[in-house]
Length: 56
Image (cartoon, rainbow, N blue to C red; front, side, top):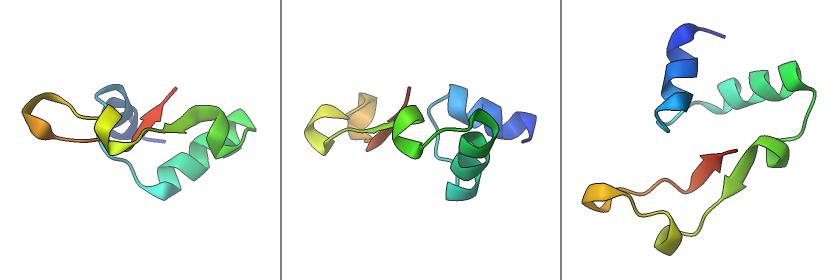
């Protein structure tokens, strides 16, 4: 896990499925324990940008 990956998570930027897998392995959890799917109409950010997933 690199500092850049952690920074991307802090900024709610996209990360690879590999990064999510590594977090789940480290935390000994399931994806649903650390992520939540948010519908497009609920996930709009400034400028119309959307993020369909949000890390808890």
